[in-house]
Length: 202
Image (tube, rainbow, N blue to C red; front, top):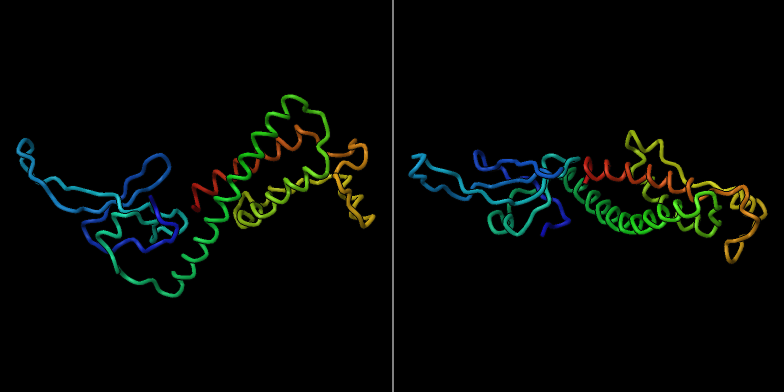
């Protein structure tokens, strides 16, 4: 189990190593050495103490092993503390939004196969945008963030211009709205961006 609060990677010359596995980079600490009678030399014993943060390579998310060996390790400076605090906030928000997004994504992929050309009513589009908007804000500074858009809908625009909203979200005939296949395509674009953001920043 890894903490959500980042810490600095310990300064322990000769005892810290890194190992990449399944897209993550694990921080290992040499806890001791044992003699191998076959090879006739000492072999290091390593334990994983955290996962390196891609966007902050001098920091990691620690686990229980870290707390066992490095309680009270070196302090962060003010800049590092601010970066760690912002990271923790963004991480929590991203995890929450990803869970909501995944539920929505699979539903629309299914509906796009069943009724690809049917319009999506404005109520659902509002719900989708309520998740996409904070995701777009999180990823907006990334190179790929500029290609992410919210879902526009002619009925929503008309409602805004008229200064009212439909209580059940089904006003109008939907002929100028987004179809399920339209929305599924846009969500797929977000899903790809989220995967890249997670790999590069989280």
